[in-house]
Image 1 (cartoon, helix red, strand yellow):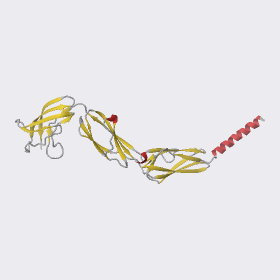
Image 2 (tube, one colour):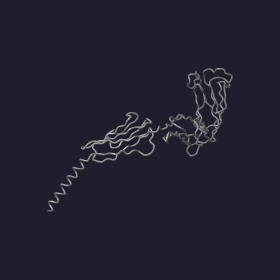
Image 3 (tube, one colour):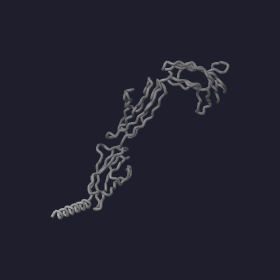
Image 4 (cartoon, helix red, strand yellow):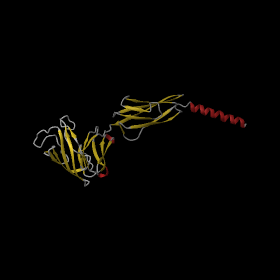
Length: 283
């Protein structure tokens, strides 16, 4: 009697396994929560039953998106480039047949944060020029780390910096339905003054090395005198932004040759400079 019961239960187990393997497939697509934005990868997965042996994802329209790793995985990462409503369909299959389920996915256009940033000088004090070039945005914020400057929402900024250090400014471009984008700009303002002497310049109007000026960092005062080889003053200027174009103060073109220049300068770090060097003019 016990042996018959054991055979009965064994047969019942076999039948249950056969029934399970023959169960028709089903699937439900799991959509990421919240607003979906273009240019952001999203994971789409599914809940299934029926021992699935094959998956196939499809989208309509068929363009304006990318799917990884491929269309035949149990879950996929999809990045949309167009702000449209897409029809997403998942086909699942096993030995008992095929099942299809679908849903709609609506995308909002993401803003793209872009800017131009120019520092007027590597040392301090300096001005940072920022110009917004973002696309698909409804508004912007310039946010300076550690409150180095106030947050601003204008299209362009000329922001002064009077101290050395490492700085970061972030441009936040606001998009539709919260589809925002952020781009950071990291820059360094040197804290030590420096003067690098130049010994050759070529004022021939070719757009390269046409103006003589020392390479400086962190200066707030500089005076320069240029003399010919007989000690006659050819040119001078006062200010860290000045330079010599190869003409005398009266506008006469200076000939090729070797000149002498003297620099007196002061740095924001308290360092003072009194330098003398030769300068070769070649046209």
